[in-house]
Length: 219
Image (cartoon, rainbow, N blue to C red; front, side, top):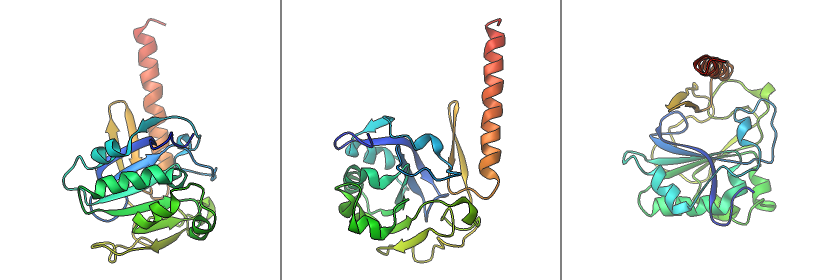
């Protein structure tokens, strides 16, 4: 259940970040991934289950809520499993603004062209300016660039302002922690050690909140 018809099965979004691609971008992470890479930073987004189902036009408007946004990043989960709905989302967004599009996928580009996992793959690839492909391999994580591991490749399928100078392969990594009510979202490809520290901090906060709730209930 990667998507329902023309709806996008959305795990999370972030409007306005500089942690995951050139310029100020909005990010959509989709729910559902056919890969189970060891050490995946988003294991909760691997199961192919309903999360938040959003129409492409509605999602495009959400991602463009900040007028300064100049690009979109598609991640997950596995974007190519929902290629048709995401291609429609990008088309709706670009009808309003000239945007660059960066997409992460566990599939190799050759496989996507030869045996696409979704009928909309060719259309989505036609929308993508930069594609980062390949499954994450923890042993090959060198802590550099927007690739999670060295085996992943960066394909510049089109060129837009700001992308030619951006070092996708070797730049120092950075990440943002976005707090939304009781939830925390790690945005970006984290430097080594940050993901473990983030998970430990989240677990500590959850434990404290749970303890406080039990004490408040007198249990």
